[in-house]
Image 1 (cartoon, one colour):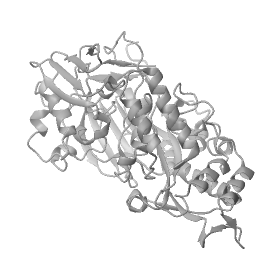
Image 2 (cartoon, one colour):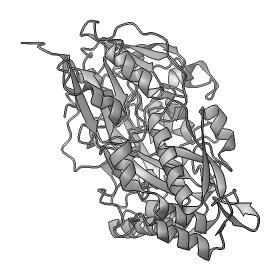
Image 3 (cartoon, one colour):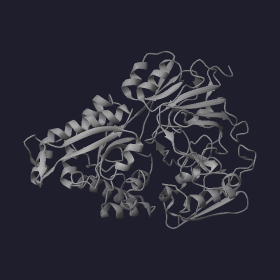
Image 4 (cartoon, one colour):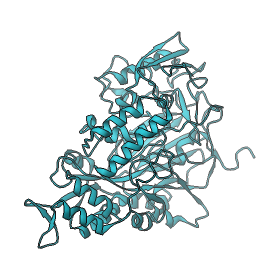
Length: 535
């Protein structure tokens, strides 16, 4: 797989996260370019739009931000490699000190030199409680960061945190442009300046982001001089625009990607992912908060049928946030489809069938709404299949479509067909999803799951470098989710991308849930070359 030209490292493989905070977006307008444009430009269709372009608020926290760089980056095989740092960090024997030496001669796109002060400013601002960064707990281990001259940065930790180096793919913001301004609402959130391969030239909310190549990029000016990310939330519209030549590439669900098979002008790329679909089962609802209902739904659902019929084989059953082929997956936590078992669980818990077949206990019907994102066919199909399986067990689920603006205020009590997942360290997958202290914190712990054994295991897993102890902690989390599943995990989904066959150097990384600016074959668009170039 292609990777940036000079970012080679000989260190051992360290797999990491790659995700963007995302939000709902509206239908886009037209974009210039498309398949008829010159080979030095590209227009790609993405499903999600970032809420902000400021690294201080979460953008670029997991790499591939296009506008910015981190101290480190991930290559095509998800190995850590130097970016703004000259080499991988020097780590003290106790695992509490990480020292980075910075690359010489790097400037921000406005010509101001990059120094250690920018790194210190970025991390200290993120950790400031006044900064609205929902991912701050990912840096919980960080005690402090300081500059030693202009070219050295030293991080000190409160406790050994095994994946800390992976956290330093965090995009770095310029102190001179962002300091002294309102970090949460200032101009930098939509008009950023970075050291990355591209410079933002425009952002039409809900429609598109446009970029131009950074001619002074430290790793060499990109051959793709103009890049447009068209925000198209509707899967069918995205496929139509690709077929019409309005887009050069797009992420598509399996059934729509299949329509391009055999097209000699386009290639399909499949990315392995940690992306799951799950149903939140809110603790604060009389039905979904009942452990028996949760356990019954967990075995009533036919995950295999979802993989075969909805994903057309492009995925696998999900029993938790950790994929079954991950080395961190707890063997034995797979749940087989068992409708009779689901009925028995409900019978024993006192949920008895009513005249209409829907179960009742103490005057409460086993019924609840399930929301999914408008225009997202995969979520819709998962929601309908889940409701159908639940009905066979006597649970009545009403599916409803809406935007995130409609759904978010209802998340405390209403179920949601949600998505998530981050490659690499199990802390990335599970802490924000399950920690009880994060319940109600935006899209963290959407189900408001509250399990003290899980809370302890999550803390144990992130506070040691000992692999055996960490494995035991995350095994505990996964086994507790069998006993009390606050979510019904359905499938892990492969991402499919269809792209015009006009460039060399395309490939995919192991991807997170989000398939936006940082994912897909355009994760390394700065390394693409027009076909036939140099021949």
